Image (cartoon, rainbow, N blue to C red):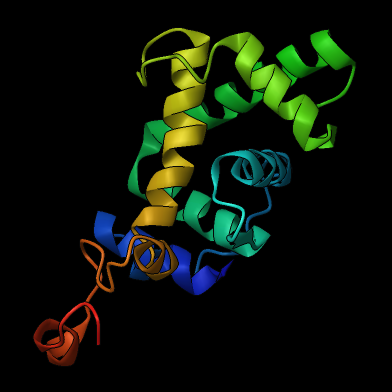
Length: 170
């Protein structure tokens, strides 16, 4: 299954900003590409192997979240910077440049896999909140994520009368 820009807009609709992002996909901030690449690299670790991530999915979701929440942009940038700093200390490269196995080592060495998600917490807690959980939220509120969970209509995703009247096995 491939996540696309359309899936990101559906996930953003749950936040109430789906249509607001439609005209905002051209971002001139050079840090955006670094953040998108890092989030794509993170998604390769946290998403099920059956999901293929399109960078446009992440870019669209990221820009929509920036639009919806002012503080979000700075917090995500800081989380990516901290993740890159840890990757450079351990392997001498940015997080997004590492192989998936080495990315996993960095996340585990930081304790992100054990951290409790907290937007104002420690570095591992913020990375878990702003990168890992944001990516999982984007996936599971999209139609693709809903299909992974056998939920045709994830919360906030309109399915219409046919989906409502049809049973799960149909």
